[in-house]
Length: 416
Length: 100
Image: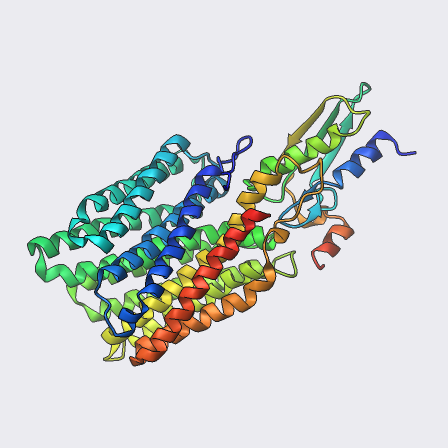
């Protein structure tokens, strides 16, 4: 049996972020097993089936969202020098959200028509998280540009959920039917570029200098990243509801400019590093930034193509996997060893020889694993773009297997 | 024969920042070691970044290592952020370990 870690002193009780991250890895494995076991159905092109709904929600909510929440419980005190508002409330929030996600995904699998109630429970868990973060950030002595990034990300998450509920209400009652597509686009934009991207931007400004030991770099670029990206989000949102294609082009251009300044800024920080050789998982977090930037560029160029509406699905998939998922996975390879090290060795340091964080993780596996991971995503991306079913099936199967290996290799740290 | 300060420095060299795998002395984190006549010790130190997630672990490690020296009595660790840590505080050994 795995014992969950206890904290020491004034740091966050690591049992809290650890609970979220452990849950997220189990959800990741389950979501991929569901896909693999039902491979026959997917291979025949049947997507709108309960098992896919269940797997998709386990992946997006059970894994991505829970991993992001766990990471935030760990990183918010680090980045903002403030304690989590109420840790007991955090454990209750974990319990409510976990039960909500498990019952929601389970209900989608067995009895989709009864998914409303667990859905409300899951929603309550997410709202509790937002409240916890709002109360925590409120106590920060001096807000910084990081507060702007993370605060805006949380606002985007709130709007994304609200729009999601509106979508369900629209479907059930026919309310605001003419705006359904606009609301759906806004839900997607704020969910991935608003919530996840702004969150990764914000925490990158803390984690990149920390993991590369960079010193004496400028920070002025961060406010331009924020201004351009937020403006891009606003204009794109307005364009969805006004059907103004020029406004959408300007919005996408501003998003591209914001992301490009971010990439350039991170490269400036990396140039100022003291650590000559970077850890392999962290290197892939940097690769993810480059890939995210390329996808923003591709999306902007494709806006001029009359087939844009057909291509956007593949682009959203690539953005989600190559930028967001790759970033989260890369940082989990740093966060999980840290949490486990703190649990096992923080009382031993200074008394006995303790391993370094690098020694907690098998780094040799990272380059081949992540390279196959990227190649599999690119295969699925090509398959979606050119409608090649065989390529999709091969790519998705490899991807599911790699996801499971990644989850187990991260969990392997618990044996150290 | 080592004097008590040398023993403390030697003990501190066994405390490693687990992220960088460099000891706190070569990293330039130790600003001052004060020893009273009754062998009470106060270590003034910093960390590479405020809000370092290894804050408690490293400061506890510093205390444990000095408490392990027979001659020392009470050990205090005074964590300061001014002057802020900068790379020029590292030893040449520390920089070498970073590949510099």
